Amino acid sequence: MENIEIKDIALKIDKENVLKALKCFPGNDIYDRIAGWYDEMYNELYALIKPYAVMYRENMTGYCILSVGEMVSDYSRSFFEQGEGMKGILADTMADEFLFALDNAFSDYIKYNCAKCNLGVQKRMSAPEDIPLSEQKIILEKTKAYKAGVNITEAFMFSPVKTMGYILEFTSDRNVFIAQHDCSRCNNFDCPRRSVRRKGEFEILAEYVYKPNLNNGEKIICIDIGTTTVVFELITSEGTLKRYKTVNSQRRFGTDVLSRIDAANRGRIGELSSLIRYTLINGYKNLTKNVDSVNKIVIAGNTAMIHLLMGYSCENLGKFPFKSEYLDTMKTTLDRITENTLPSVPTVIYGGISAFVGGDIVSGMYMCDFDCSDKINMFIDLGTNGEMAVGDNKKIIVTSTAAGPAFEGGRISCGTGSVDGAICGVDLKTGTLKTIADKKPVGLCGTGIIELVSELLDKGIIDSTGLLEKKYFTDGYRLTDNVIFTQQDIRQVQMAKSAVCAGIKALAQRARVRLSDINTVYLAGGFGYGLSIEKACRIGLLPAEFVGKTKILGNSSLGGCAKYYSDNNADCRIKHIKKISDEISLGSIPEFQKMYIEYMNF
Image (tube, rainbow, N blue to C red; front, side, top):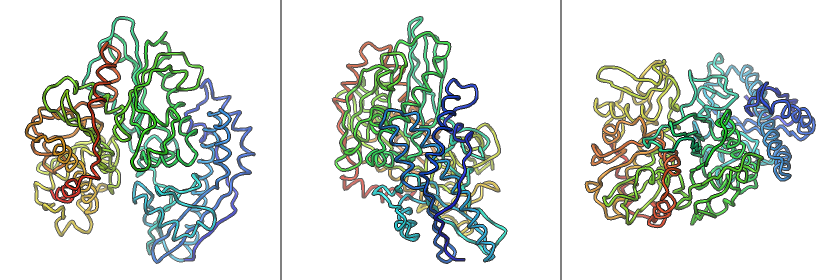
């Protein structure tokens, strides 16, 4: 089969798909306005689309890049610069839809050429779900798409923004053709274009152990802005009245913090800010429908998310020595933050400690009274960034470790998020599997991955180096007909758990604290919420000393927001936490590098 290159193709998009992507449905108070803008903008935007698609074949591998050009992004950006953020978001979404249309059309070209050569396609691999982001540079080099104006940034993101790349694996079986995007394997669970729903929606953690204490008639809204999700909660004197949970719409610029920092530094800060402000507007309206008034709003998020919300420069967040523009606690009003005609509700935004240890971690430590104890405690937020802290009411040392997405099902062959049917418990002795909502297994979520590895170790199917038994080495260990755990999956788990465990021990060493002397370990985050501490210690994710002294917090960022309002001393306590906290960089600690290698084994 020859290489394929397309420079001119007629594309059409569906208006209702675009409006659905914006959560704009008939009957909404803004539906007619947005639909009208769509009609006004369509022809002008269509004229700016410059479709380009190329596939370079090398033996049984195809390297593909597709782009609709830079001018559509310039068109979208122009609205943001004029202060018309909603029109900018609409234009950006329309450009996304054109890119998806190009992907579908290019798939037909590939299928036609495969048929002529008696070939099929057995796998499509995209970053970051299937391959590292760094592979995108290889795709660019193989396709030579740079001749058509496609480039790659230092963070391995394509430019123009409306560009995608992937790798195809060909097969001699012409009856197999899996060149299209596979929604069932995609980690963007909230994507409105999903054709497959994995038997349920992405579960976003909103539970926490703190119980708010408000007076009669008082109402507050707590907001946790995460890289992946945003959670809103309306609380009254009777407890939680309503919750609103959604995926962070900035994901279109990348699933991780660094990708979004890179996008902001390439001139997309206005769009990123408008997206999260639009999310806040929707969340507030959703919670306050049929509610008279709100006393206060409290917001927590990691440092990068708060920078993007406020429109601060991210230039120094993405390069050494990783400095933040602003880390203080902010007191403002909702209308000022959102640049909207919403009520002027007093709003507090938690300040952070550093570029990588943000206000969400400060909020979590405040919730669990980290600053009130004269005993040594440790706080761990088990997520992609692995923030952690150790100390007492006089001194706290904080750091973060790059655990990667394995604990959220990322880069695992049959990994998934917390959706209905995700395997979350494994007992090989009895041959039983536990799934979320007791549905048919669709994949392994983070807790299921930990439990499976622990069970495989106990049965001797994995040895201490992480090597699978010979009979499973090639094809992996099959849990169900459609869920397999491979040798490569085990390596991903080893790297992730080693980063966390080495981070914990290096942090304790720098703080001159013995693990056995730690009084309580507070475990925060969605992954930690359902974790078996014993099995986490069994595989070496957590040190053995943590068994029997670990307290699971849930969404402590949201919990700290809830606690803030009812504590008259909150500002002083938060200021104290930030004042006594010092950050260390694990990358500069020689013993961390040694421990990372040492703890790779089970």
